[in-house]
Length: 145
Image 1 (cartoon, rainbow, N blue to C red):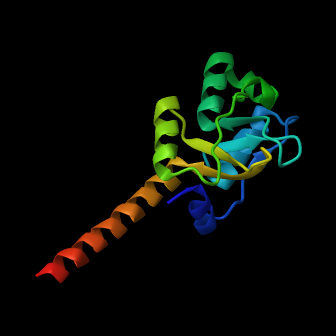
Image 2 (cartoon, one colour; image 1 turned 90 degrees about the vertical axis):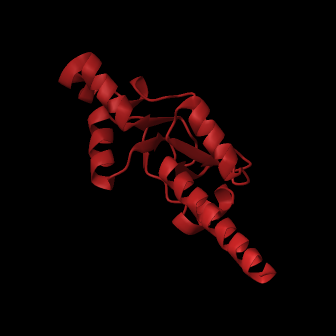
């Protein structure tokens, strides 16, 4: 299973926010969409950064309520790790574990935003893989008896 197959199941919709938005705008959008991260983009295809719930909490903890008035670009992660449609679930697990991240934007061959994968998507895909493997082994065992 790879990123492409995950996106075929869940869809390629990505929650984005503009580079001129405030942290309050991001917090409201995260709440309203009930999600954990937003891709920051000037045009809905170029990845400028990513902002997560953790980024909101850190900013408020460091700067108080006034942090909500800050520009999103001051708190976003600008060095965004991405994945490609052909990347395997195992590769996603490596990236997410190694870099302690929960969301990976998907970039197409031209580097344009093509989707987003969350840790929940990866877990669901891995459970599906294990279920299929388990069924195949059970069928193999039953054929041999």
